[in-house]
Image 1 (tube, rainbow, N blue to C red):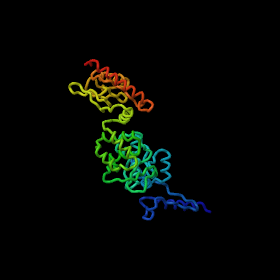
Image 2: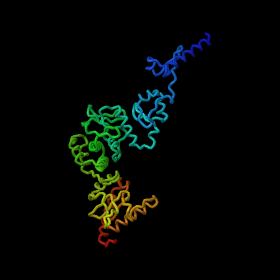
Image 3: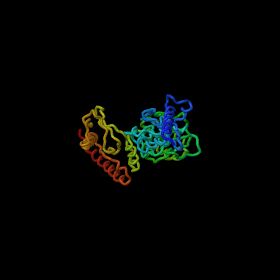
Image 4: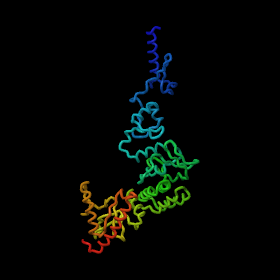
Length: 376
């Protein structure tokens, strides 16, 4: 075979294919074909893939759908390589995000992206349970975030599929709230869904947080009445009765539970301690008025920085213990109360007995102190 003529024919074919692939010269017929295959003998050679510079820009901070990526000139093999190389992250099947967009995000931020990705593929559903708690930005304890939780009013039964827990249950879509463009169950429904499907502790943490955010207890009770025959309703009822929006953190919610389980009297939350002129000198986590004892989680008292006994603005870790001691002395000196510190370690079952003993000892010492004159 004469190689020179053959080389000339190949050049002509390549030039012809390049004209077909060119956006300016592509005909109506070839416009529907994204890539041109050139066949020479038994060899199939795909036309060059569009270079990154010529691809339509993708939003680097948002979720990318597979069809968007294909329309931008990527193919499935390239998408898989981007994921394998850590450039993209798969949020769920057919939904991706650039890994760089996740830098600085915590597990809750990432879960919100996963919720958006899931709802983009599941019609007639709302974010619910733990996923709704994340969207509402509630305090949560041991949340189940390995799955996206959605509720659909229609379906035979709940199921887990493709990283999504599909809950089936009655829900009025007119009560859904929109957060960051995502339909979400309202606060009272979210609290009860979590309380019904989790531990008492987890339910109390969420309920305390929602009440602190302004959820009405009446709405919570009405929702509880509507689901009284649903699985987990008894646990949810306990949560509703125990919840208190004055608890300001996960730690304080869990501490309330432990103090109750130890059989101690019910404490007052967020008690304010004032000077004779009404100035707030301190606000404490738990106060047992009949026993003149304060219990602080981790020993961190909340102070008004406008008074002399307040925490200085330039507080450094090196003087934290000194400041805590100073605060305790102020409470003892001015108000004749005992102060007990508790930490996360005290919440462990094996440490609770020792915590109860310390608090009851403080009750006794406070009585002794009250029998003496109180200075200044």
